[in-house]
Image 1 (cartoon, rainbow, N blue to C red):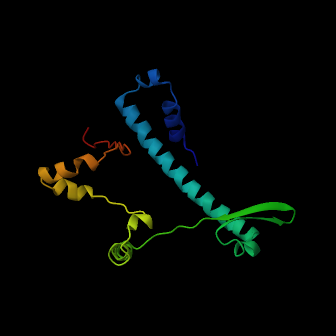
Image 2 (image 1 turned 90 degrees about the vertical axis):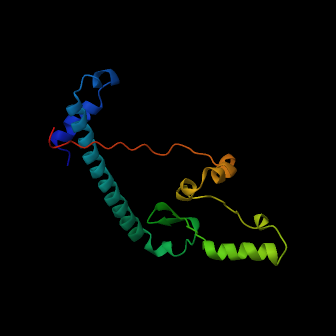
Image 3 (image 1 turned 30 degrees about the horizontal axis):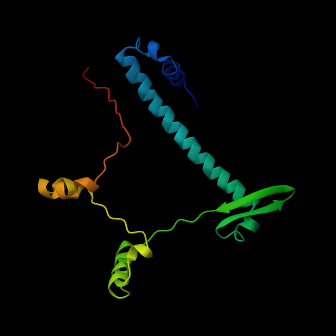
Length: 159
């Protein structure tokens, strides 16, 4: 349920940028905190909606789901055309893949890259622990991109 505080925060946050400069730091902190509360409620509501949608659709097409496998299938149920899609998620065991890569190279005398995607990376923890001369050796292969920006506001009790 949207509260009066939620509405006040939304009003403050939908002001044009020039008007936002007129807000006091306390008002901005309050609006940001309320926005966090609203975001949490929206996230929970979306999760509940997704679960309800899955239950309703599963009940509607329960006789047809097992026939789909992976991919898509269109069926007609009580005069409704229903498209059922199922994706698959594949993961690979890294240790077993390394053993196979070694076998391809040493036993088959072939290039593993012809059969599999070979990804090489260095953890940031390892990179930071390396001496500068070792970092220099790998520096040309390293690209750093900005990640997500996170800003946290905390109201101090003693202020």
